Image 1 (tube, rainbow over the protein chains, first blue to last red):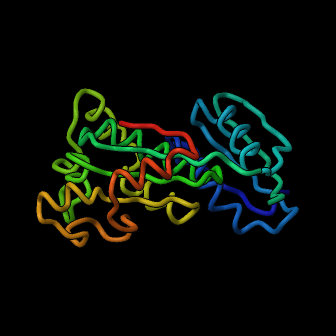
Image 2 (image 1 turned 180 degrees about the vertical axis):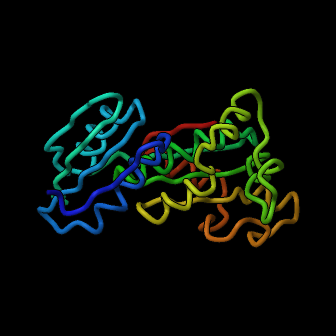
Length: 75
Length: 132
């Protein structure tokens, strides 16, 4: 169970990333954020976002055009 | 990680270019890159206060698509970039001078001030430069 859930389904690029950045502020250091998105670019975008911000992408799952990401806040 | 700063020069008033600039600026800012955006020429018209959306955002085929699909509002993206990261906007001092405009002509909470092109270009030497 993640510390926080962000439902970004239906949001166009770049809103899921902006919302995730905002939501991470409410996650304690070492805690996790679960993001659900449907933007087709989200898989590569979340990989790049985590690499750029130094946060850890623990899980990336795709099912029926819905993407789930689990991000550990490390910065 | 010390990120390479991003410098965006926006002169076009086309909705599509403003949208692209706002997307790049906000994504750059939340990716922890310092971003500066220099706004001049027709691009300034889109930042005027209290415009209805159909006058603020004028463009071609893709502008219609952006409106129909309710793409995030460009000025809202810029506000979010400022809130969540290090994003600064500068209004071109030459354009303001020619029109006799002050910064209070533009939407609140976006511009950090007015600057000249020479200063912006000089700062941009240290980063990645994109013009639209």
